[in-house]
Length: 309
Image (cartoon, rainbow, N blue to C red; front, side, top):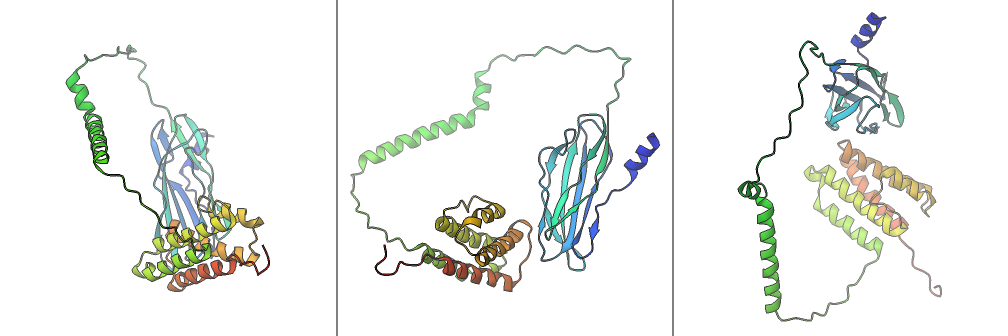
């Protein structure tokens, strides 16, 4: 029975691939560790450019027996034959001896779920030499108090406190010498929401951000303006929500199905550029600006006709 386990440990486990939609590869650099040692869990996804990819959520633990020590984050590179590659490495460990299963990971590639194969890792105990005597724990050794050592350890805090006190005294003296001046602020004219957002979008367009190669900043600023408009227009927490959370909130809004679809397409493309490092085409960048201006124009509040409150 034991030889079957060893054969299972030596077999490479690869995720299934779907032609035309991408492939998932999850593997470990070793399948045998000692308690507390680390193993590298390499995850790689290859997919055609231009389609969406959603990674599985990874927390501090994979199972009750396997902990995640470090996460390298997602790194995107361009592969061969027009394919994009995203790589991610997890450092895992375990403090329980035995054979533990690494559960499969679910990726969403262009809306289609793709699961990796489960993996198996053996955690062995550390050998202890029982022939040697057990040593007692040594008592805690307390060092005598030294004012010079205390000042040296807390020098930054002492210097910072002294600087704050000096700054406060300087501000008080400056305020006492200045004569109070009464400034009469002019009333600020508040433009309508749609005009403010439209002006901000035109200002962003004139900066030619994406033409200078900074696609991420362009899409981040554009979608921030859109989210700010949606939040103020429809009273939903658009700036603090993910794309899925925002679209769920807008299901009961006055937006039409076409308008919600138009907003979703822009937010999804921006997410791909910001988080998956997708490189949009010039046409997509121009369509983003045109779509944002059209969305604001079509959803702007309509003035009440004469004679209506």
